Every structure is written in C-alpha cells, then in structure tokens.
Image (cartoon, rainbow, N blue to C red; front, side):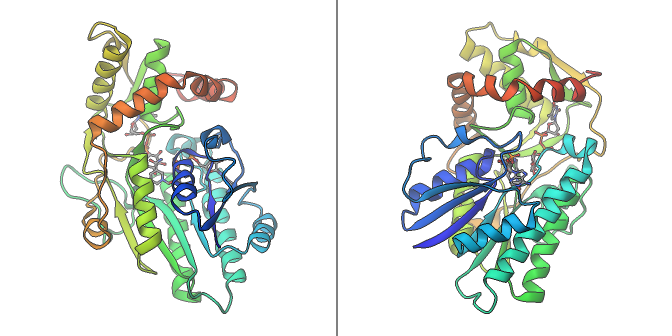
Length: 350
Ligand code: NAD
Ligand code: DAU
C-alpha cells in the first residue's frame, strides 16, 4: 500500500482533494497533515473520516521536528502540499505569518522528504500546489502560461513564489522528484467566507452590505473546486517530474459583474424580488497592490494530460449556492468568534 501525505487537507481545496484521493485510491493510505488554523475544519471531511485508508494528524508545518517525526512515522511515497496561509488581505496585515508557513513550512517539508527519500527517489513525488498570483497582474489582454515570468505583488503571492522557487531548486540541486501546478481562483462548497464569493453569499443571507474593492473592475478566472481537485489528481498521476502545469477555468469575470450575478441568483433562491440584494453593493477602499487581472491558458494540462473542467460557471455556482443554503450551521460556526473581529478590522472603513 502506498502512502500519500496531503498537507492542508482540512482547508477548502485540501478537503476536496483528500475526499477525491480517499475515494478514488483505496490502494493508498491518505494521511492528512493539518494544523487546524482558523481556515482548517475537520467538519469538511465528516463523510470520509472513518474510511479505512484515511488518517488525520495534527501537525504544524512550521515545526521542523514535528514534520520530521510524522514523515518517519508514515514513510510517505508522495506528498501533495496544500497547507498555506491563503488570504491576500491577511498577508497585507501580517506578512510574516505567510513567510513562516508558506516559505519556512514548505522548506521543512522539502527537507523531510529529502531526508526520508535519500538515495531512493525512484517512484517518489513531491507535488506542490501553487497559485497563478505568482505571475503578478495581466493587463486587458493575454494569459498566464507555464513560461510566464514570476512577478508577485502581494506578500501572499511573494511567499508562494518563494516556495515555488525552493521546490524547483530542490529538484535541480538534490534531484527531488517534484511537480508544481499554478491554479486560478477556486470557488465551491467549504470556501471560507473571507474570500469574495462565500463572503458575498454570507452577507446577502445576513442582509449586510457587499463590500466591492475599488471600482470592481478587477478580473479573476474562476474554477469550481472539484475541477481543481480532478486536475490535481491528473497532475499527480501523469505529470512529468520537474515540470509545472497551469490550471484555470477559461472563465473570466469582473468582480462587479460576478457580485451582481450572485445577487440575482440569491434573490431567485430566496424568493426575493430581483434587485433586492444588488442594493447592498457598496464600493469600498481598494486593496493595496491589487492585481488587475488574472487569466490562465490551461492548454498544456488539457493537451498533455487530457484534463478539462466538468462544471460550467452556471452549474458550479448553482451547486455552490445550494451548498451554502443547506449548510447554514457550517457557515454560522465558521463566522462566529474570531471571524467577527477579523471582519470588523478588515472592513472598518467600509
Ligand atoms: P485554506 O486557507 O482554505 O486552507 C489552508 C489549510 O492549511 C487549512 O486547513 C489550514 O489549517 C492549513 N494550514 C495553514 N497553516 C498551516 C500550518 N502552519 N501547518 C499545517 N497546516 C496549516 O486554503 P485553500 O484556499 O484551500 O488553498 C490551499 C492551497 O491552494 C494553498 O497552498 C493555496 O496557496 C493554493 N491555491 C488556492 C487557490 C484558491 O483559490 N483558494 C487557488 C490556487 C492555489
Ligand atoms: O488566483 C488564485 C488565488 O485566488 C489564490 O491563490 C488565493 O489563495 C485566493 O484567496 C484567491 O485570491 P484573490 O485575492 O483573487 O481572492 P479573493 O476572494 O480575496 O478576492 C477576489 C477578488 O475580489 C479580488 O479582486 C479582490 C476582490 N474582493 C475580495 C473581497 C474579499 C472584493 O472586491 N471584496 C472583498 O470583500
């Protein structure tokens, strides 16, 4: 039986990746290493928590000896590394937290993998999950590809870029068998309501204002989270060692258009007259260093690995809204306590 360590498996994307691997790979033991920060929630995994090939271990990747100990205990054949501080706004108020987890935490994993696989790298795989934000901002035209130069603009994207560089350097220098993917904005069930789509859904449900940064003309390329999980499985199984793959949804939206669409969809679902939720839209102070546009050219993963998204934005958004409406207890539990203090500080001048 092979052993796969998935880091950050209690978070938004990680929980969908863990579920997919537990269900699709009964021949593999899936170990979820997660520190359970504010963004990690084992309730995301209730349906697989008793599966015979699944195990959770609470480990903080900033702690090198804890990482070494769990690698020694489980002897992994592969690592799929998602654990990170992931929210751009938090990186602006506390950049060091992003260096500690995203850079130093990744270094601890790289060192542990190198130690445990020393002299026997054949068949092993260190798969690092990264973001399109490392490429910086696009103008009105063009797409990010695997050839695009790195140009990160936020402390979050700088920390992810740094970790990508270390992962690549461990391949070049020590022969560590790595693969990297850089994905665009995900959305879907279990998305923490500090991010645009779930924050808007939550605020519409609460009748609170909908804070749109700047003029709302910033553009993102949205991908349903289960489609990212299927892309990760494809790269894990077929991606070439030492290579990177860009993953995206071919689905660009200006924030203001997306928020208006969400308002209309929510009004229909909630039986409100059209236009009710749009009245809550409020333009607020812009995010510093705000990247104008992200868009991925995902032809490589499509042509070489045969991957493409299964959901359209229409079906993905419908599934997402239905999930939040059926899981109000989840939404309530993650937005009580520390979330309130975060929200008040972040949107103080909104
Ligand atoms: P998330 O914030 O929802 O979850 C992060 C998870 O990592 C949580 O379970 C948290 O408890 C865990 N974690 C954080 N610090 C840790 C530490 N020190 N030790 C162990 N565990 C720790 O993040 P997400 O949105 O699911 O993103 C997952 C990964 O995918 C990240 O690496 C992110 O950079 C990348 N990514 C995200 C998106 C997106 O749109 N959300 C897009 C592309 C790439
Ligand atoms: O592109 C991939 C990245 O997508 C991931 O690497 C990050 O982990 C993930 O958080 C996401 O980053 P963004 O900054 O694009 O996502 P966020 O949901 O924070 O914001 C999306 C857009 O919406 C962005 O232009 C900022 C804007 N926004 C966001 C919030 C939270 C608002 O206008 N108002 C808000 O309240």
